[in-house]
Length: 102
Image 1 (cartoon, one colour):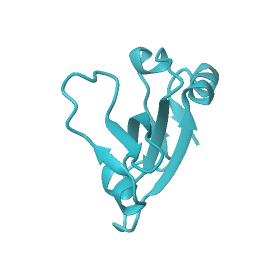
Image 2: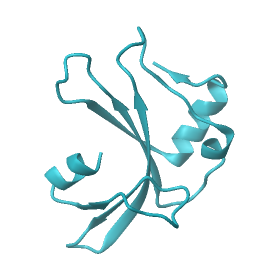
Image 3: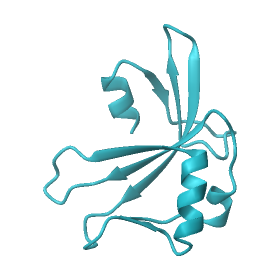
Image 4: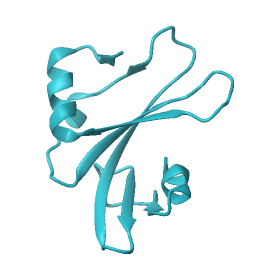
């Protein structure tokens, strides 16, 4: 995820020992805006794309928090990225309490 953000020209860091709910911190140096990103990754071994959420992740709330769901490809090609706000993510989790499936 951080590599993809860097490819797009954004600053991204993953070494955040005190940012418990942030996997990647991304910033735009031009406008000084930043977001906290929770990254969820699927594995290609399952027939359907699936991203597991735990109760801790489902209860997060912040205007600067987004989720990025990464769909890894079996053939090793570039993954698909799905960007979701925490509000939408919470609504989806309520609809699919066992996980968020496609």
